[in-house]
Length: 338
Image (tube, rainbow, N blue to C red):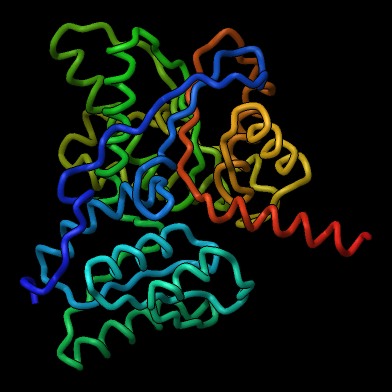
């Protein structure tokens, strides 16, 4: 089976650092920069593409013949995993909750890549996954299952690399960030950024280098603060292993659910206006489920905590197809009002 599996050149060669650019829009009394993870050149990019590159290595090593994962109809993760499996010449099976089956661009792309989408009640997801994995094994297949959102050590490792790129940028330009904001969903992006920061600072201290204070703030797009913090902390502990006790401190993990707006996929008119503002002033597309919601949350957080005169980096974790879903919804609203 391993000899039949097709290679993805980008993942074989490694993902090059994504650009960090200063934003020109007036978003508050700080200097704002954005890291364009959405410009990773695979399936519309984003942090899910970076994570997929790590899972790609494991799938090759174990010679899987079918890739499985879980996610909603709007999932960037499912789109990219389905695209990756298609490019590798592997079958793909996605478990998805049946509660919301609106046909979005990500859903259409998953179907275009030939993935099987199996729906079930959200309360039955775990048992459906277990049953389907076992059924494939009984058929003599070798399924590789990826947790929703690319959760797990490969996903965390991918975002440790993101932090290393940020640190390299700081060293090369002399621009040091006081805050790093991002959308926090399943937790591995934040776990990777926090783990990368802890490891980098530990290395600097050992080399008697100056460590500049920096805060990483996860803007929750769905989970409540207690659950979200614990999931991120567990991922940090799993990744750091024996180094966890020596390096981790509770104050390193800033996770806020103040801007969830009712949960996953929910957003306000203010979020939509923020997305329109960023596109108009900086030409950067954002979506209302993840990035735009988090960018709006960042603006609110900065205002409420009276942060000013700082260098602030926002990590754009991707989701371009969802931007066009938002445009379609706006056009549909206009048609209904006409």
